[in-house]
Length: 79
Image (tube, rainbow, N blue to C red; front, top):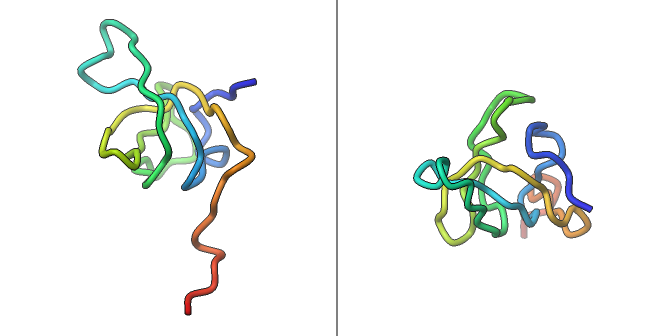
């Protein structure tokens, strides 16, 4: 089951998501990857939350593929 990428609270660092790059908006081609950074500051965006994936792709999240491996690094203890 995939979730919509419009709500920021669903998307976490480490989530597997499907994004549409700006250059792929006309075709609707979805690129899948792991979230490295969340760029959109607002809680909701009608076209999808903008993220950077671990492989450097920047795009708007159209679907959250896997939320079970979400990794919230802000709660990790630093050595």
